Image (cartoon, rainbow, N blue to C red; front, top):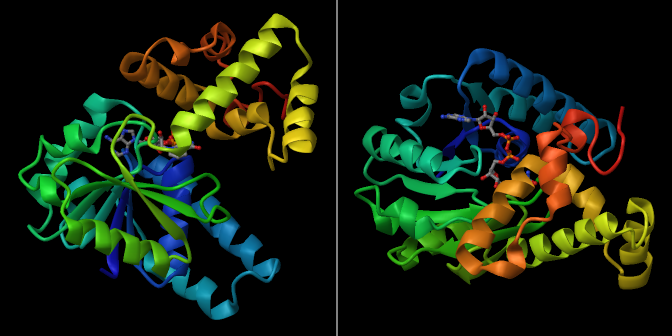
Length: 281
Ligand code: NAD
């Protein structure tokens, strides 16, 4: 299991690659081109340096982790020798299915294929492969280096062995796993999207300012982050995709807030674009 690949080097892919690399795994990180991978390398190495400077990892771990990371834009070369692939590309079902078909073709027969989807169906993705018993969702949280949880989501055909291996891998990363049976949004996204959407509707209705909605949730309900700052961290485009999927599958109560849709249309995507519910510029 010590050789893994991560497909997608965005917010989550970089974090997942970091978590594996500091835990002694060799990580092949893949994305569509070398430019994105070069930027990912810079970010991952900066995070390693920060973790070292803040005393979270020692000198040996940082140099090992840097050596453990391989950046590879050719998907077949990235995945052909590994034992586990974690896919972390955009939350679009057609894209994920296309990648899983390729992974099924390129990977060894024994390789486990995991998706980091926030909401979607590992069963639907698995059905497009010849190894549905080895397909599972391994849902990490943002920022990965800080968040303890991994939701292990069992699709209809996922084997007990696959679930057990993913739970063991989660532990080896210093994380805790919960096992969830597949329904859209699992436990966390289903709950979190609803809270965030309600906060956006309140902001739109003029109930309170963004800062006061977040402050109320933090100080009154003991949430470590407000729902609007959390949505900015996730990325409003990603959140909108999650809401659209949950609205399609679970119905009316997940209708995306019109304010969220408007922000995404305007290019206000949260922290990653410099502005969302808050201004980071
Ligand atoms: P992101 O937009 O930051 O990154 C996605 C990456 O995928 C980009 O670098 C893009 O170039 C790459 N990509 C697109 N097509 C590809 C392909 N064919 N091959 C390889 N790479 C490709 O997205 P993100 O926020 O990291 O989300 C990734 C996944 O993680 C989504 O399924 C999302 O729902 C899930 N997720 C996100 C969060 C969060 O807080 N952002 C939390 C948990 C789970």
